[in-house]
Length: 146
Image 1 (cartoon, rainbow, N blue to C red):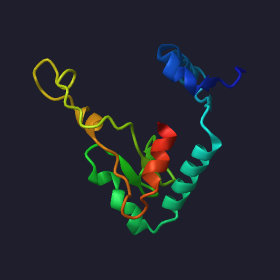
Image 2: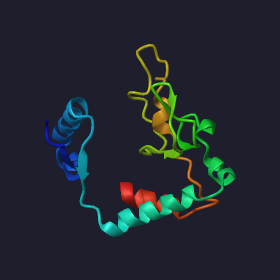
Image 3: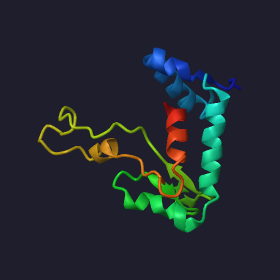
């Protein structure tokens, strides 16, 4: 049996090619991995605490950032919406992605026929933050991912 792969997130910034190779190998050969990072505990704990607070809110409030209202499919997904291999998953979640800002550069935006790539809307979108019900979530998560 192969040992659990350990990837260091710092490598993603210093040598992204090597990190990508290690990530692909871990996912294809083992299926999961341990990710080491050098983030301060305070940032991790704050992100976890703010996330817990969000999920404790009433469904009506969480639905204010419902992913189905977003063309990028980002946001809150209630229990029973997500599925894996055709089976309903028993979890609720928030799906966020990197925010690139309003991607105005036409390079890579369109295919050779001048049509916009179908995934362009996924790249240009902002995450739907619950600023009206929990303004502290956005800075906590942004501090964590940045």
